[in-house]
Length: 315
Image (tube, rainbow, N blue to C red; front, side, top):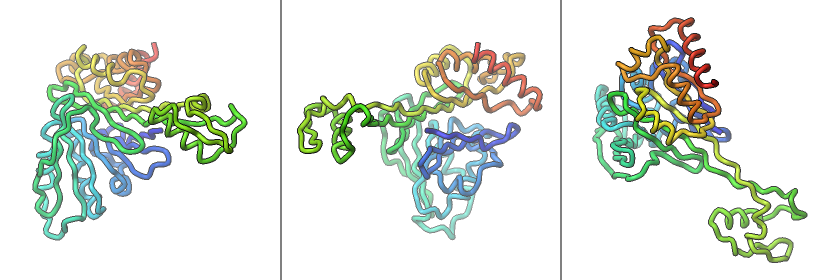
């Protein structure tokens, strides 16, 4: 299960840390100026996900970079077209004469279309940007626990929204039979996962076809978590949000303006309280959380904004 934490205070630029239960690695979404982001958070991070590189979403990359020096591993950075050069430019602002090769490195995955990803690598001390490949798919990141898909929204520039999808797991319910557990349980799960229904399963000296034991298995659907940052509340953007985030368990969504400032939202390609709440309701998201509010608002304004969001989401 994904355990997202806001690492930015309401009056700070947005930053979200994602953890998983029984998983030691962390994942950072957005690099706003977040005072709650710790050194350990950064050092345990395996991948960073950036929606776009407006200053309020990218200003704190330098701090993350600072804390990852010497971790002796490669960190993945995912973001929109152009982010590889922007990361290199950030790094190039500093002097690296005391940093050796192998101290750490970045693999940058640059999203150039809905199904196109350029892959780059960059490492000290020269920090030369090397293109190492191109992937024609919609999955930007994955490991043994989950994968991350994306869609590109319009914020007058590309703004990438990310869906974290935990892998489904197969569970066995021995209470449905008189069998005792053993090595056969793993063999049965493997037969099910690899779609080999006629595999022979031996239980206590007796042979069974795997398909005759599938009734013992249940599929636990993986948890889903979405990050939807800056976007215009346009029909085109909302259609893309519905396509990727329908029936999602939890979503953090940008709600930059109050309803009374809808005109500003539309002029600046931002979403607003009512639009964000409504699209989350239409997607059937079970737990939608408004985030990333305009810094012009005081605490009372933010409370009003959240109320407007909830009314649209729950109606």
